[in-house]
Image (cartoon, rainbow, N blue to C red; front, side, top):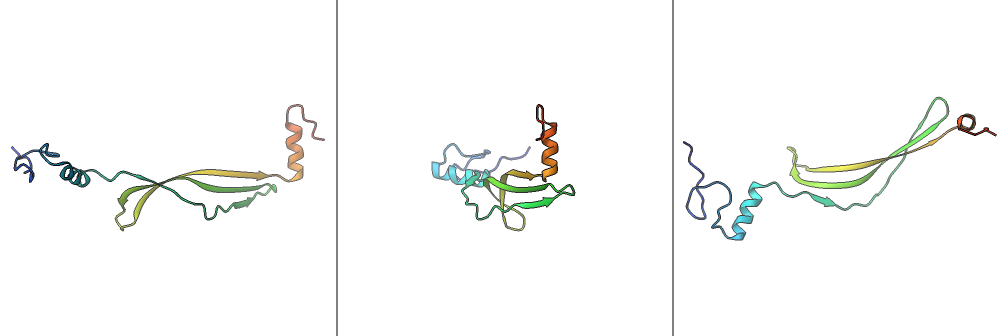
Length: 114
């Protein structure tokens, strides 16, 4: 039968945080056992450039990603860099040439395209 770990606080044998440990000792042990809590990071958009694509029919699609949320997970990757979790929103804008705009107007219910 395996022996439980020795407790340096009460000189007993048990798992987890010792019930006799002062709050500071318990917090220190808790920090070593539990991963750090994630931290929401504030940020400022230095740039939010558009990426632009022109389709063969002349339509122009512009797309950009906007950072919504950034979280420092409190962990390090194997190479030592911090691990972040990010949430983005995609923003898209489409511009059609005049002939396609007229065709769209014709197809709309009740639209006469003129």
